[in-house]
Image 1: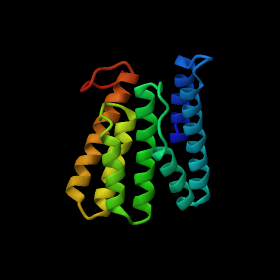
Image 2: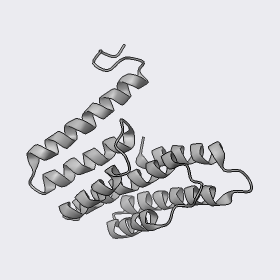
Image 3: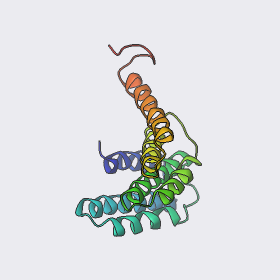
Image 4: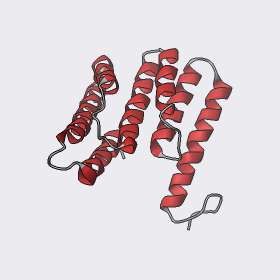
Length: 163
């Protein structure tokens, strides 16, 4: 599943879960974030990383509407921070990439896709900065989260082979 599709799933759940007809601000924020995410995907696919970066910076710098569910806010922002970090790695800006990762992880590391993506981006940034042992540790943490998610999705328990 592409990042854009993952974010779109979050958006659908957020809009369906709880934005009443009289409270449009949270829904508008989520819809705007989804649109910016799709735009960033399109720009990235075209190779226009500077414009994709500017779009994502605009997303993370915009105020979040009051009433947006904290988990939805976290998911949208963590996704954007991971994508910004990957763009910075591609631009040769390892320190800037680590700063985006730090902002994302500050929202709360969990055993979820968003944390795993940030840890993967952290590994790329550390590797680009010549810190291979620390990069390996980040990759390992991301792998462990992905393994736990896969095991749960397949109905198994961590540490057991999937059925």
